[in-house]
Image (cartoon, rainbow, N blue to C red; front, side, top):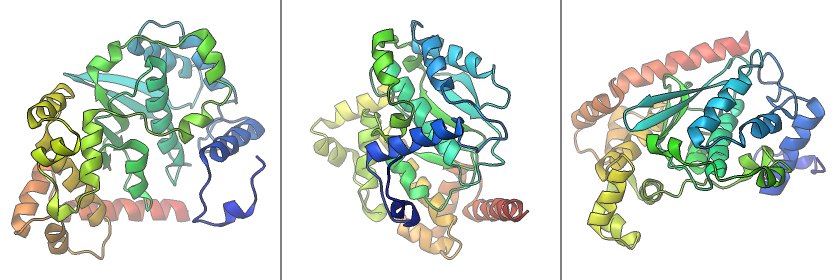
Length: 314
């Protein structure tokens, strides 16, 4: 890929978007495997391009994603895309064999690619309501916010993207001509592109992320920072199937999940860090949100981590 070797030896080194895209494209091309050796079976280089050509004539996003799903069913062992509707939301679920993907790089890459590719197809950033990961929070979990700018649930029932159902009816705005230009650098550049999620929900989440947990801003303050009225902010969030209180809760409990994964931090300390004056109040709120108490969540995470460590050793 023409990169200096020492950048790969330094765990703190970073790559530019162009260098990263070139590294990934070179790796896929030389290995002739778009799944990077992280599945028991390979998917040949060029398969993504053929999928794009098969769906570019579709009328709307749901039509395109169903055809993409059918395309990958032709490959034995390839990750499968399943589409599930639930009221006002749609879940795009990625089903794959994760036995070789121990650092979750392939899972992360597929989540990023399907969101950004779908956004490219319709010519706008799709609102991303949440991301589910069917694995424990990895050591680099803090970077997931940079990738998705939305709440990420680890130990979820599936690896998936949650978007508004109305987005599925958006027309495909790309053409065979624009696809030719797109495929000159894709899908590698999809991994290097900035997150296209520019909804009001995403902007509020970014504001909350930049604030101390003990002093999260209220709706009026967030509205002022976005240069809109509180009523407008409330209405826009409602249009995107969420609310300001929900976003604050998500921010708190996502941070709580990360803190609980660190065994050295006590539950009392976590409750205080999140702004709860009583540990019992944090227990009740966490259980209402996650379905288990903080202690039970920590035990589940510990068991899964031991299981993964044992599997890795084996």
